[in-house]
Image (cartoon, rainbow, N blue to C red; front, side):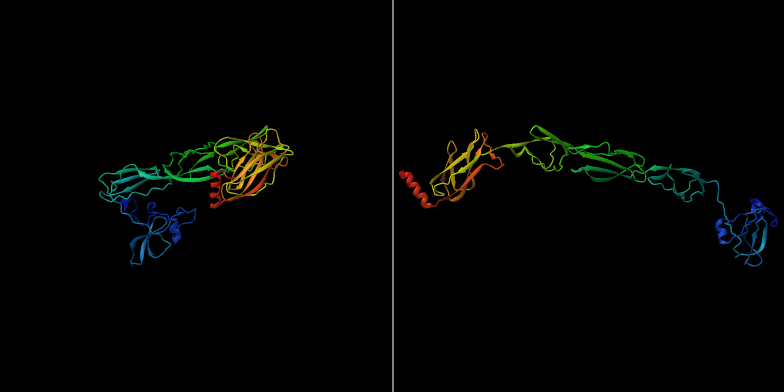
Length: 400
């Protein structure tokens, strides 16, 4: 501290600005003393120890706050601070590091292992040097500059919202990767009977470093119309395809009975516009049919019984029709007018035979109460092998 080659005074008792030092906050916390009088010329300066021993090893020299050197201080006194003694190497070789706006210079000897300074981290980016850094210091000084390079594995999300039949959406998320700051675009396919909803969708955006970019694709179901026609009135309602169609109220028409919808009334909306028409059956007042009690309700193989039908208030162009409503065992042969029906035993069984009144198109007629105009009779048919043999020989020899 009295070596003039380093800029210090050769007189240890002289106040020397070059020897003055201020304690760090850490040193003060440990107990180092500093001048607190703001009016004092040495305000803020501290005492600090030297390595020079006194007459006893427990005593060392020290520097006063004014920069003068004093002796006879106990080495363990904490009010006096310590300073590192630094040996400077060859200053001719150095590496200048430009680290994102800050400059740092490191001194190296030739052949010394190079330890690059740490670079700050930034989400979505990676710090890179402008040139390859050698492992050991060459024979000349170097300079490197750090810069940010966008990561190529930054995540973003594409959410696809597919509309359900009730108008709600089912969400499906896909996490993808791309370059931070790059423009990302959502790719999508539109299924059959769906349309792309541009108003709700977000198809592009810059990939954010914090992985927060979310692109959205909305796929809406197509709507189709269902038109119901009742008489001269029609009503059109739109539904998403696949949606449940509410049950329709039974159409009403004075003097008529509702039969069905034509072509049909779907329960689920198809992927097409559809028109259905209410089909009505005219009601007839006073129409009644009666099947007379047959002379026999029990017939054997090959035997025939004739049923008679009587109709009151027969509509114009109406006809009498016959059919086997239930069971089997007989064959039917109606007369041309339909008033008679010949019933023949052909197999073993029981059946219900029905006579009903039909309009000119063959549709069953209903009375004023909406009840189908019909009447029924039961016939039993018995067949066994003996009866078949007897019938064969009777037919063969024409025996009545």
